[in-house]
Image (tube, rainbow, N blue to C red; front, side, top):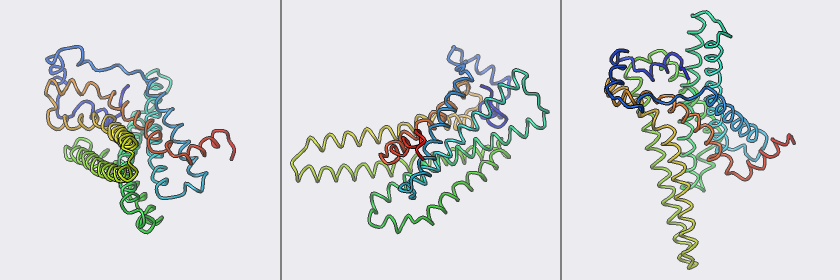
Length: 314
């Protein structure tokens, strides 16, 4: 799949000449340096699945008044962000396919403006998606550690301000990225943002798991049921592993790619890693498919509403 302007330069670093990159790739040698030939159809299918999934989540939350709370509003915003990832991916793929087959002929200046708009949409959705993953982690942390004060801490007004701030920051940062995409400082800011979100989620979720484990241990000691304690601890550990594992596997390779662009753009092994850029994009789209399964569909109330939405029983 071909990528548009700034994203294309993320795949092929600007600070390494074309000749140096081809020589480095040849020097690194093996077939694995040729990357993966990912068909456009896969991008289209994953984009459509993610779009439908997240659209259902948004519809269910809007339909059910019981889900009109800050927690579900944040999940709704995450679904909207993932929808934007899907829409931008679908738009990019369709435009590239139509232009490559000569079906769509557009003036070069219009193509350039379309490039910038779609890239800004992609960057904004990526930043907002990561941001809302962090916001959801903080919201869950407050729910567990400040349960009695949750409604006074996370008021609807504060939730609205948080959501508006994330969307505004995502739009501004994506505009800056598109304008200064060949600036190393911009990449360092993106990398720093990802690392901050990774550390934030690790600390908060591990702390929540430790508290839950301690609570279960206290209950099992009083009731003398160690089997229940071990079973619940194992379930909690599996949930934590899935949640953080999916985040790291889906987002890690893309941001490691950015780190290599900054640190070793002409190194033969780094150049080989760059050739898998489309795979990293696929993983990000997969994250948009998986997010509803982790954050939304586990809610019994939301699943019930989803069934009503699918059956059109408004």
